[in-house]
Image (tube, rainbow, N blue to C red; front, side, top):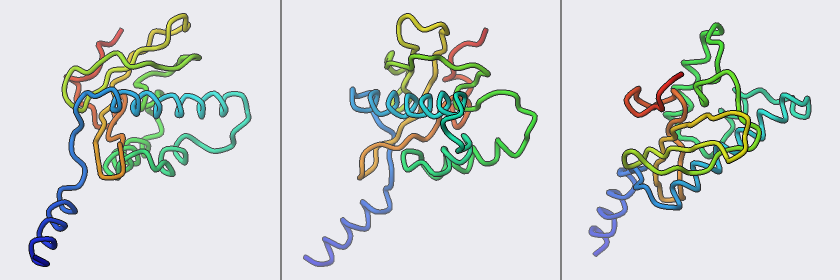
Length: 151
């Protein structure tokens, strides 16, 4: 019996996060993360937050280790000229709401009605034992085939 429990525990531990379906909870978690990121960007823009976006992302408990590693590699090139989580230079004022999923684990968000900017964003989300992890957004861990069409 102890051996069976140990094998079950080991299997669950090694499985780690798995790709999420397109549940309402997955969509809500993706929107919450991007809206938290937007609040950070607006606070930086208004001078109310001295914390850099790099620090915000790397300190976040909502993103996967893979997300952080890809993000760190991306920001090593200072000449990018756009925000990799948004795949854009500008950002909305009102935030995002879920618009559905094109594939399991890939949540599409659209800007809230009445915003000055139409900026869809795709967020890759994983389900793990503790809830949800963001594994991609914008160009971070999002294949080109899953990204919204550009201008």
